[in-house]
Image (cartoon, rainbow, N blue to C red; front, side, top):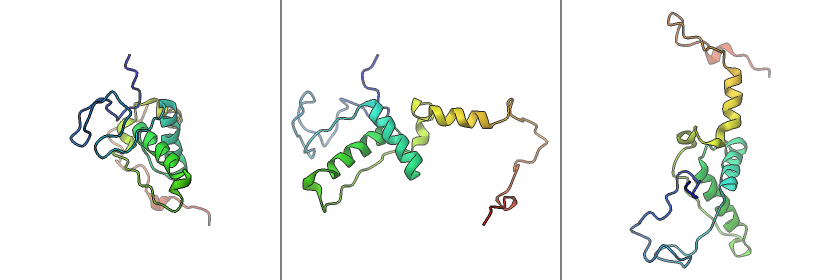
Length: 134
């Protein structure tokens, strides 16, 4: 089994802006330092970003967010802006265990079997039919 479990990252992939050997932790090219994130932490941070902040991100973005928060939390980062890039939307990873609980909830809310009647109108409800309490 591949020891690399954070989907979306490609370890050892050659890059034009990373000069030097890949078997060292030393800075190279435009990279000043390397940081690490476990697969469990990556999933936890992605899930937190999705549920608490409304940003549906995948596991690699969860790892990037965790590391960015660690960098921003350093004393030397006080008063500075830390920017992190989430390269893709989490919808690409719906088969990933990250969404296991949410998928179970969604499946439980759907009729079984699903209504496949082709004679029904495509729109089952419209937002103007919903009345929210004020």
